[in-house]
Length: 416
Image (cartoon, rainbow, N blue to C red; front, top):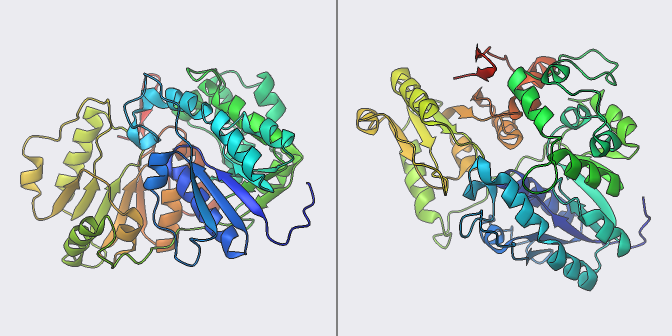
């Protein structure tokens, strides 16, 4: 790793275009800025505008850099993050993300930061940074075992993984020599097998990830040795780079009491409703910015909430370009007073911090799980693609929860 003589460094930060990535990268930026270093936090204009306000004492240390996103016809107008699209457009968003390279290169040439911390999608970035003499680190927003499960970067780049069928991913890989229960279910294994194939962006997700790892000098992981004493050393062994666990880095609830806050009315409305509920009685339902439930899944979830008899706050977002899914006829009228269906942005961390909330029905996103752990809230986790493997299966080792078997029909597996 290149040595730096600067007492205070200039560090550029580039997350992938998903707020489940952007927010952890912003939290890391805050931690670094608190140590006296200068941050250039880089994203697209609309994503920068949607960031939470920086703490006043850090605002002079973190510069928010806007680089316009490449416009491509397959994306909706103003779509700059995964929350603005549906799953079928994800590869096109990656293609648009690749279009940031010229603008980012110009910024790096002009500003010459000491380090750049980047995400998995920016496979083109490390060679640019090497040419400019900028040190590089990859921040992996999940845990170490999820990354170690895929093997070496060289294997991912060459496509020479011995695992070619979904069944191969349903047992621990051969380079894991210690006892573990970590393995994929079939539908998770099918995702993993498909992630090695080039998609409409021109590159596979595994190729992007591997090129970033090869081009960086260190891997930063959002986890800790207490949870992964075997997996962190294995990750270093696989990639021959320092692996630095950063801890969970849970975001903090900010003070939004001022009426100058752009979302003041939203926060007030939600908080007033929660204030009238009993302590620990409310189930908060939010499936994340990248989950689009089918019509059948939506109906089943609505029926479950109705039959449960418990108060609930359900964040149900509309995805641009998707067909509008409909709730069961008369559902909102029947649950009126007990439950709320909220169809726009909601302050998740503040909701989970409210004393009235006692449960969280979520999609297993790592960020949401960290929120739950730090708040001590019971979670009921709906599986979303590989995310259940990343969180749910590891819980067996950590003794943090119990996996409930799903139902299988042919080649499909569902928890619905």
